[in-house]
Length: 367
Ligand code: NAI
Ligand code: MG
Image (tube, rainbow, N blue to C red; front, side, top):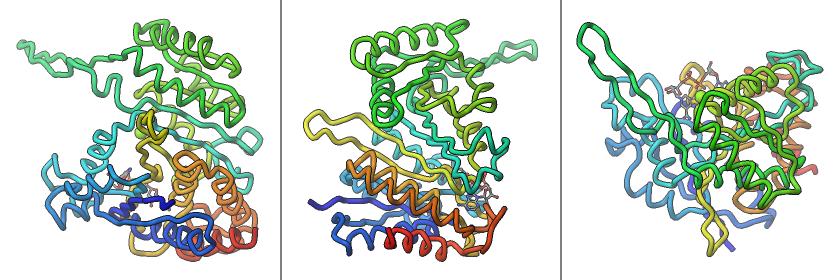
């Protein structure tokens, strides 16, 4: 059957790195490995220039109808002055909200060839392969009340509210346990139950879910501050980490620096499983932004974008083996000393964006 990919290249280096994914998809089609149909849309500044909106209603409808959405990056100085509700990021937020993407998956993989580019010593990160599962639609970023009150007397009071319901914790917990079963079968759940009621409920719900549905998976709990410490001390102890929106935001940024470069990091955002079709809405995107400082120069690293395609194959289409092959191809290219400028340390040869895409494709073809 035909798989519909909705592709949003966006702004800056977005179209440059997306072009390399399109090459790989074209090759997969030509090999008969799968039948992908690519539909393209506009998001971010590109959509604003064309429609005056950060994403058009027509493109939103296409995103909802697709089997998966691939997005590269949005934003740039050109749109710094546009009204708040049509700024480039609004397109991304709209997609996350309307597709109800509650689970953000951020792998941190340290390819041995890049271990010296990590913020930590080689022996601490070499071979690192962990996954942070961050709750994306709840918690303190969205809880009400959320306001700044003028108290008079020159004082103001800012209020943010952390809210989590049982069902929100259960569904993110299931994503983490399901992932762990396909990996090294271990989940570390993280909160601050010692000082937060939401942490107490998080701990209770995850523990009950574990006993009820996932007794075969190893579960441990770590307080979020202690986990932050462990991430930079002994990160290879982790397999899957599941945590709330705020802690997940911070911990995934910390984890990202263990791996070398922003240009290497893919991500996935998943919605709820449709019980009838077993499928779920999903958006795959690199962690990096539109990199205006290098846009148009053909020097962006396409690996994060290509890795995002691999995640789509693995998590939306049950094509885990193909995803493994793509990741192996990336690893082989790096081992040969082929690098883009952002990961130039130890390079034998510096490649352009297109050359890196070609190099990954060549390894894929050779495998
Ligand atoms: P950025 O991720 O675009 O760039 C940070 C630094 O990393 C830059 O020096 C850039 O050249 C480098 N870099 C990023 N991706 C790279 C790649 N694939 N290859 C080589 N080098 C790479 O973050 P920054 O500069 O804070 O933001 C630039 C624009 O991107 C802003 O408009 C921001 O709002 C937007 N942005 C968009 C995101 C998204 O679309 N999800 C995420 C983060 C920022
Ligand atoms: Mg962040």
